Length: 318
Image 1 (cartoon, rainbow, N blue to C red):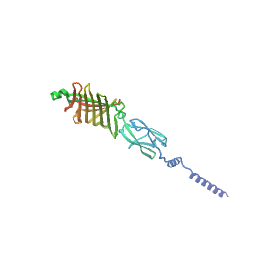
Image 2 (cartoon, helix red, strand yellow):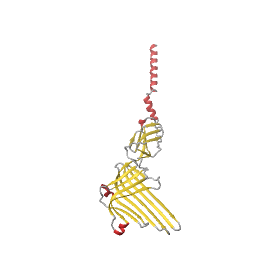
Image 3 (spheres, helix red, strand yellow):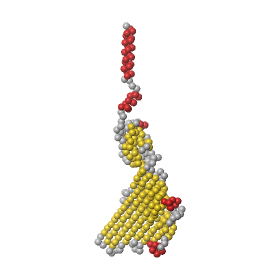
């Protein structure tokens, strides 16, 4: 009898232990199964801006990011960036200073789920999108002509080192240079045209002003190519009583090569005497005024260039 009761009790205990073990899991196992059953793919990431500078704080908004910072990675193309802060609806990162300027596809990985190329981000330095004017100064060995030397002497008034140049600035004070980024290069452009004219029964007066600038800038090698600066100003007047005049000024610089450095209020492009002859494609400086006795000023480069010769182009913010 005792033996039967003992066997029954032992059998009951074994069954209870088996039932208990079949429904019992460790906390780690429960967490793994919970994660496997809760795979989130709809993170809906977005950013509020399309441009950022070095060291900027960038926020990616969305949902279901979680709270664990080590589970999240951000990619600018193939460049990996770890966030500095994470919550369920926002990931914060800092734009590194050691990546090239340019346009990037932005991706985010949460756990093993990656949202590829959900938007584009342009990484810029502060100055590239904020230029308003340019000042070109040339100090070159050149022929100086005026109306007298052309008309009466048939030879330059003077041959030597002369300083001349041009200013590129729009009458519209809000017009900026445009900056187009491709990998490590910036295509910097500026085009402005202003036309004015008045007319009455006895006279008419008109003027036009054209300004153009282009440069291809490599922000890694700090070199500049395909430089084009043009300024053209024309004014005309016809009058039945006060006479006529026709004024025309045109400045053109086409240059192959230069280097640049950043300055406090912009950048400074330099072509020093060593590279002048191979860099200069075309230089034209022509300033004619027909009013009064008339004046004509021309500078025509006359290489070789001396050691104190240069061309400098400063491009300014405000």
